[in-house]
Length: 294
Image 1: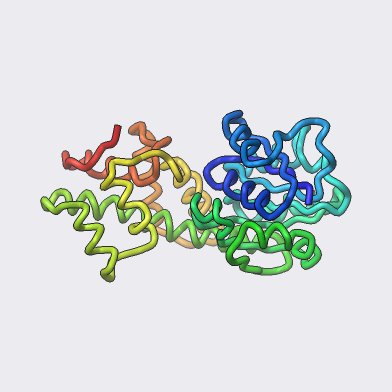
Image 2: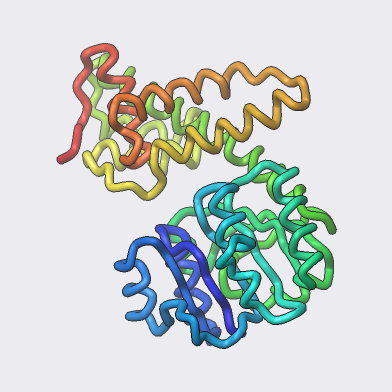
């Protein structure tokens, strides 16, 4: 299939390369020209004006505003897609926004899948993502070759856009609070004089573990804060969670506390670092030493 791909960050590039590996023709765009160059090195193309019309458009951008712009803005990719092409929108957004985008696609004669992703950069590169997806059956039929190339499992959550985004919000609620708890746990361990490498070894096989702990705590131990997922991602995603909950009249005090921690860490200059840097923020509040990185 001829695929237009918007957003070649840590997740998007891996997804695009997985499509190339499966034999699809990928034309990608990203604000960072170096990311487009990496796609080209893997056999893809920069998205130029003379690219053939898309049979599919995949958007892996940061937020709702970027999603709207790359799909339906003045130079949006939907305007360069064939009639009946399918859009896969993968950003974490509120369910009503996903429904709005699906309606816009339908009005233009396009199919739409609300398709948030999970799994991290490594699984994206391996074509082993988990995709939380909702959309019309005909949209899934059109996207099937792409989903098979990018995902280990596709959770079909309904026939209308919004359910995928709601499920992603549940995932982000847990992942964000787990990462915040990981940061507090490692700072606490350091305050007790424990060797953080041993803490990772012990907790990873104990009841207190989580995927977030096992994945992020080694970054802290190694002093490696190169961003795979930034602190600022959680300002956005937990903000979406709290907005959805507020609309439902549901208090989420644990999420609210985690969100404030990420906001404070960002204000302290850590927003562009790996989200494991929440540990540095917590530790600094108590004058505790943890690996700071370069």
